[in-house]
Amino acid sequence: MATRSAEISATRLLPCPCAPGLSLRHQRQILILWLILTDALALSAAFYAAYWLRFDAGLTVSPEVVPSVNLYANLRVFLVPLFLFVFAVFSLYDPRTLLGGISEYAGTFNGCTTGTLLLILVIFAQHNYVVSRFWLLSAWLLSFALVALNRFCCRRFVYALRRRGCLLAPALLVGTNQEAVALAADLSDWRTSGLRVLGLVASGDGNAAPGNLGLPVVGSLRNIRQVIEKHRVEDLVVAVTALTREELLALCEEVNGVPGIHMRLSSGLYELLTTSVTVAHLGRVPLISLNKLRLEPQELYAKTFLEYALVVAGLLVIWPLLLVLALLVKLDSRGPIIHRRKVLGVGGRHFNAYKFRTMCVDGDTILQRSPELAAELRSNHKLKRDPRVTRVGRWLRRYSLDELPQLFNVLLGQMALVGPRMISPQEAEKYGRHKLNLLSVKPGITGLWQVNGRSELSYEERVKLDMYYIRNYSIWLDLQILLVQTLPVVIRGRGAF
Image (cartoon, rainbow, N blue to C red; front, side, top):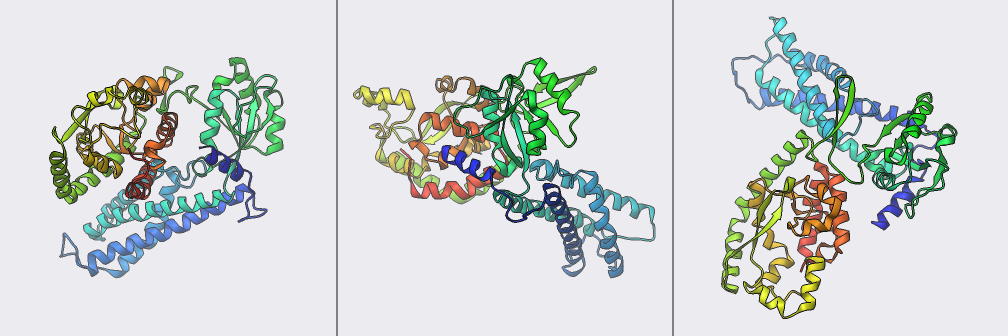
């Protein structure tokens, strides 16, 4: 993690070599023009593909409809600007909401659906036009799929540009306490935040500074306006726990008069909780509610659908392997084939996690003969040379094959394919205040701890990786861990014991 922080700190200070002399405002304008152009091409391709499927490939629900080349060509000319206008209404070209991940895809889906409904209204009003229903359905689905794919590719391109110092908004973080340090560590991930964090603004006299973060204290609240003007800051992120009520009110009064500044306030619990918050009004009073789950509903649906699809497909392929492994476990040593371990799930609910048994049934007796190993197990919850592990069990652990039965835990809704590591009720106390964070998402069969050293990591490093995953969860991070990182680590068999 220290290496990664150093890399981020170095990258944060890079100029923009791909566009020397080009202001951030102009960079954003070029990005928006590029998105409009590529969205238009994606929409044109979608409408053309829908026509090909209906009239060239012959897929239809109404064969009696006679194709009219001019009608569908004219529809493309009409629909592309209509959809682009709808996208703009849904803020898909707003610099503040660009590259928003799941929320951007949700906006894309809503925009394509709205554009299609507007077309249906026009067709309903004009009785002279008969449009194929299959073409209409295909155009709707393909427009969403291709525009979403375009946004995905554009996001990867923008991340590459940000790695070179482009499209980064200069930002300052107000505060130097523990919450400010936690905020700075995550916001310095310039790929997703889009911020070039230049430094910290201290409250009071500005003498308090964080230890080893590598961020300078560039001023204090008393000269905040001069600091903003000097560094041409666009975003001001405030760690509210670092300021007194009077300091926060004074900061709001001072900054509200500065044009072009976007001030954001933390929840005040960032270093403690990773669940999202909801702002609702009771009467005229805005109040913040902590969500019990980390994921937004649309994120949860997407993650659940993806996992069920992958698990069902995987079980259909590997069920012969499961039978072979079960037979090997049974023949190697006496005892049950499946080991049930009681662990904690979302909200602290207990459930049994399934694994192929890898230990002797009299493991506790074996461990009592080695008090030093028993002490190590209590400390790290892992043993590098565990005398309780069977011959087949050692091989299963090396390649993580003992965890395959946990696919059924995923089907039961108790676990996820990707997530933080599972913990026992006794182990939860070692997480301290981070326990609330850990229990806000399902434990995973694999995760950041699995692809960054596995059991060779210290307990503290495992906790840090779990917290990083929970704070930075996205469907794309899951896919990266699952499809890109996990398989090579498992094949090499390193770090498992």
